[in-house]
Image 1: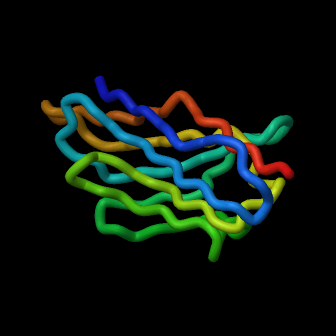
Image 2: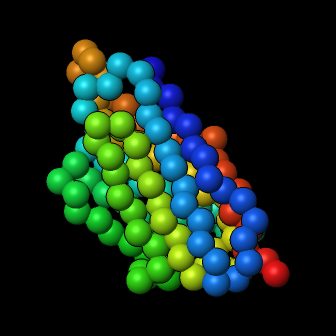
Length: 120
């Protein structure tokens, strides 16, 4: 079983920055995808950004040029640096990690979610 723990959410003013962190632990053999999703009140959960094992990244259009996702493979950790935040970024942010355990079984694990609120 793979556990995923997020941290770094909170309240920030418009234009401010936050960094989210997500660490995976357990019998991990390999991680091929690490991503951040978010869900705002009354809206569906959406993929914000993800990064694969080769380092390739993708972003939803609304966060391009403002958010950066990066991973530390040695720590099984993924980060989301969020700059120039606005009210539309207010949501619960969820970390999602996919890979293989040891022995080789696929896993798809989610964090518990961390609240990000952008407000003056």
